[in-house]
Image (cartoon, rainbow, N blue to C red; front, side, top):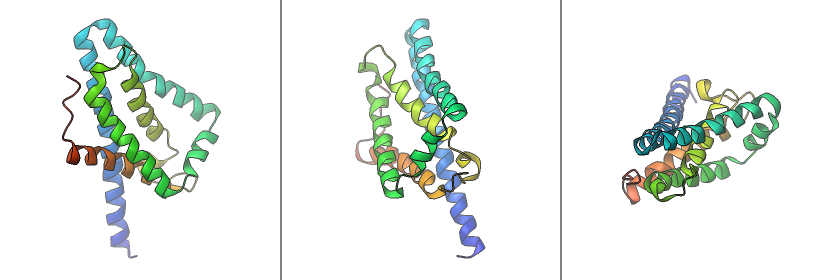
Length: 162
């Protein structure tokens, strides 16, 4: 491939990665704001549900990087398919979050995906992994975005859980 084609591919990759991160972050924010609309206690619980995966992810980054190495060794097609399913689950959670138990399950799930992406070794800003598994990490991002968009195409945009 020529340099122009590589530049175009890099732009598409970056756009998809940014869309995946922004979508998950906005959904986390939606959950928190909606919970604060119910009560301060519910809002704080929702915020804690969003923050917990980031704290655990930070611990893994600091003390157990091998988790990321194992995730990066997954074949690209399996990574895409798994992330596609996760994207659909995110949309289902967005639609049904108000019917879930008082434990902030939706927040924990969505924030776990977001924190995994944010702690991916080098993939967020450059699209490159220090583990030399660039394609696999990008497959996860493409999968999440595809799952979310596929949900909207087939079912429609979630109403936000009531």
